[in-house]
Length: 63
Image (tube, rainbow, N blue to C red):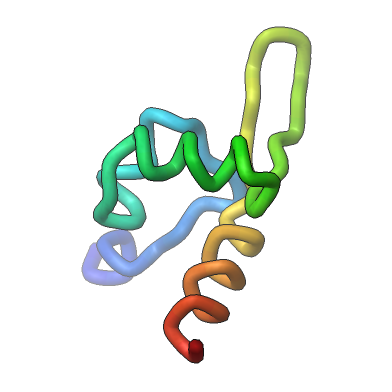
């Protein structure tokens, strides 16, 4: 059960951003609008790859 707190899903929804990454949905919307994060669209469902988000956060931390 301890590993579940450190687990990142492969994809996530927009509304899961605060719980997974610790910043608000509007900041995430800004990243999407600027083309930093790209959605995977299944009909009306938009999913975002966790690996893209973690790579973006890592790049920002290095700078």
